[in-house]
Structure formats: structure tokens, C-alpha cells
Image 1 (spheres, rainbow, N blue to C red):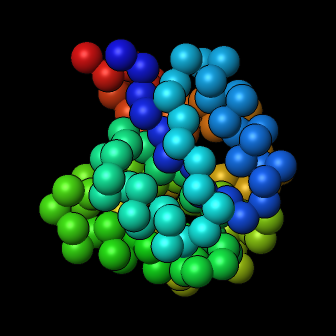
Image 2 (spheres, rainbow, N blue to C red):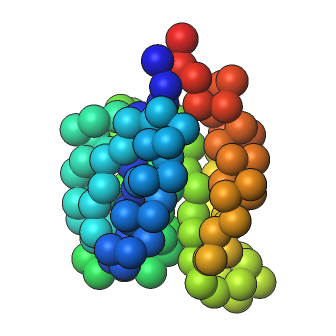
Length: 127
């Protein structure tokens, strides 16, 4: 099966763009628009990957990361953080974790595909 990916961003245009692109890659996509829904849906659906904006209403993606790490059901989910801010500005709040990556908006689809390849076995194909 192809991966189930949870996309979290308060910008509806970003979630629409990402979900449509990921669907063309045959991934199943769940979309949320705030940090509280991100934590709830991650626990409920246990996605293979989370793509989250860092600054969102409810809770920042980096704060939700801490919540997810404390829950055994979600602690192993890889996370791809996205932001319009450069990495240098955010590196102090991003986790130093081998199962996380960062991409700057606007997201280049080749970089997104590369990050998915790094974070998921077989590039998103889940046996």
C-alpha cells in the first residue's frame, strides 16, 4: 500500500496543493488546519508520515512534535516540517531527530519527493 500522510497547515492553499500532489503519487492524505487537530488526528489515524507547518493556530508544529513523542502510538512517526522562514531562523526550535526533516516554502516537489524517500521505506510504499 502507499503511505498515509497527514498534512497540517493553516493555509488552505498549501494543504490543497500538497494533498493534490501527494494524491497523484497515490498516497492517502489526511488534512488538518491547526496544531490541536494535528495531535488528535495523528493519534487517531497513526499516519506513516506527518507534513506540518511550524507556525499554526492552536499549537506550533514543533510543540505538537513534543506531544507526539510522549505518546507510544505516535512517537515513531517521521515528521517533515515546512515553513516560509529559513532554517537558520528556526533551527533552535526544530528537533534534532533523524526522523525529521525541514523544507522551506514554497516547496519544490523534487525536494518533497526526496524527503519522503529519506523518511519512508521504499519512498512511501508500505508493505
